[in-house]
Image 1 (tube, rainbow, N blue to C red):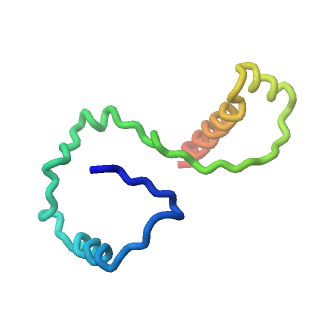
Image 2 (cartoon, rainbow, N blue to C red):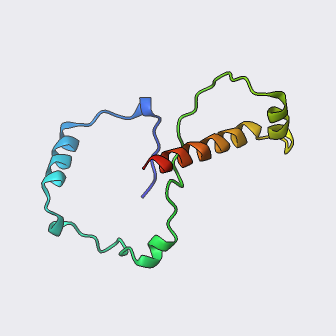
Length: 101
């Protein structure tokens, strides 16, 4: 089986046959679905699972004023200072959200 990749704007329209097949599948009861080619998920699998591993939030380009000493501290390790700043802000946001709940 070959993998076919499309850009969003190039995704072909569904045909009536496609729609009929999807509707038939959506009506299929769970007990009629063949899961034999899917291994069961064990506790060991979940121990190694990582939440949000493939999550990539959308980015916004902004202009922000930062004290010179803070900017120098962020840049001292070289490239990637904007990513480090984002990580610091995300950690602060998560701590704030966890403190509320």
